[in-house]
Amino acid sequence: MKVWSLIAKHLEDAGCCAMVTMTEVLGSAPREAGTRMVIRPDGGFHGTIGGGTLEWHVQAEAQKLMRNQKALLSFSQHALGPELGQCCGGAVKLLIEVFTKEQLHEVKELAAQEGKGPFSILGHFTSDRVIREVTNETHQKLGFDVNGNLLESFSEKKRQVYLYGAGHIGRALMLNMAALPFDLIWIDSRHNALPSVTPGNVEKIYTPTPVKTLAKAPDGAFIVIMTHSHSLDLDLVNAALTAERFSYVGVIGSDTKKARFKSRLKSFGMERTNIEKLICPIGIDGIKSKHPAAIAASVTAELLIKDEEVSKLEADLDSDHMTDLNRVEKTAKFVQ
Image (cartoon, rainbow, N blue to C red):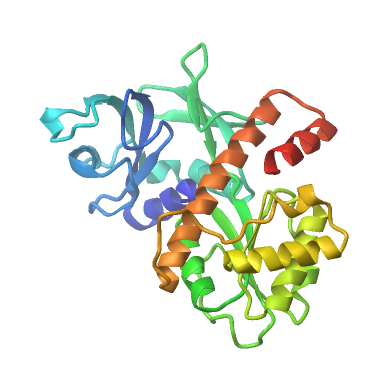
């Protein structure tokens, strides 16, 4: 969610709102440090810190703190045990910030920065608020420096997924993507196949030449192929694997289709190591249903797993300050 845009909207509409931030996790907990909720005075909210009794108590506390419509900070620590009716066994530290209309200008500046893409913040604590400054340094999602200042990152970069095909499974997969950390580019060669209304993170492209759109896909993108035509599927697979720059290339189908495609790719002169990068069938093991929604759920789970793997690799590469050439080489080894 776009945190600062939400806060700005609520300040304009209601005069105040609260942001709950999970600042630290000790042991097992349902969410990670950096998780946030934005809560309105009427109890409406966006985001989650894990649900359950903890979240219910925090919502009530935030509403209580907003009654006077004054900026303030509230720190707390909660054991996720019997007293909350939870059995995670860990503990979490939370920060509740109440924002008022007096802070609207600075919140709008942060919202504008959020609209440009990922950014980091250095926050200085005062008695009743956090004074935030945008920095050029890249932080983790949330942490503290040696002086106790807050380090935050917002508007995380999303993985781009190029989805080819707007059939039943394609539509179900598109809906799954709406609430997940992906930006979906949805392509079909049939003029009326793409629906008129889609979630905000979906870009629709109608084109009689879908293969050409691969040229615009960024390095590391995920390519998911499920068109109405096996020959088009093969053309897309061939072009995507030949590019040697995508972190996932998968096509819907059976083991028989996979064997046939591998044979054709070999006849095209493609190297075996490149052919082996093809994912087919797509989706995680264990889900046997052929219902479009079930297949879409399986594929969604596979993309989430792959995104975590690739993101970890990319973070390791950045932290090691590798050259661009070394990054390409290591990523190529990983996706094999």
